[in-house]
Image (cartoon, rainbow, N blue to C red; front, side, top):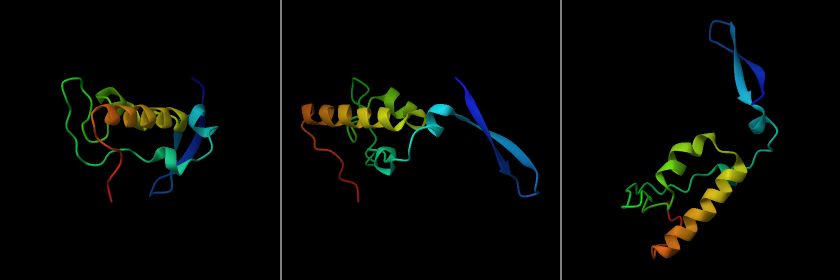
Length: 93
C-alpha cells in the first residue's frame, strides 16, 4: 500500500513524519461513518457478537483501521444482527 508523508511538529520544534495510507487521505471526511455503533454494553455472545452493538469481535478490533465505506457496511450488518437477536440499534445518549 502506498502512503503519503506529512510532518508532525513536536513540542521542541522538531518534526517527525506521519505516514497515512492513501486510502484514508483520498476519502472525504464523513463524521457519521466514523461514529462507532458502540453503546457501552460490551458483552459477547457464543458467536462472538457484541450484544450491545451487534458487531463481531473482529469488526470491533478492526474498526479504527476501516474506511468510511467499511464502517458503514459494518454498521448495516450489525443492525441486521441486532434485529435477529430481537434488539434495536443505537440507544446511547
